[in-house]
Image (tube, rainbow, N blue to C red):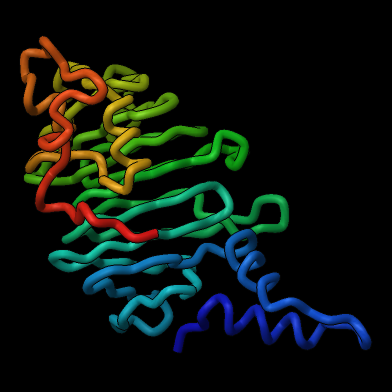
Length: 258
């Protein structure tokens, strides 16, 4: 069995309320957001498997996430995870592992994840991570301190696109020759294990504008931004307001409900 955030925290708040003091139910939801990673939204089929029980079960809004959890979205599925340091959004046919959960300022916090396949967006609070946030796929690893970026592991390669801040990536051995620093508007694809392609550019402002309008950043079949895909020679990148209708992947859910 898995506790849902609101249910467990409401029970705790009732136990510790002093006589004559009214405990607001809204406070339990706020504690859930601040003090323990949890699933805040799902659409379509989303499953989670815990290390302790080793069985797949449907993910639900308010479900608390634990070290060793694996999340899987099916075709058309979507999951939004909130934790002390930021937000993770998993798009369809994606598998993510949470190897461990740390503690920061008395809050349980996701500090590293592994994307086994599929596409995920990360929005990390610059002030929320003391030691940094780390991610890995089957052929690269990376670290950030406050940024918005996507990671896609598709067709045995990883694409990383940075929309805000800085992301540093390297191979899994962290060899010095493989280290790349990506700024906002940079995208890179790494084939197999060590084949780092040249850093390319796209228009991050358009992607963030779409995101704020509830449209996921456009990602093609290899995880590249739509702007880069439309301009593989990195020439004439679309500016804001130009060609928005084609700026996202139709395979992703374009009717997100917050």
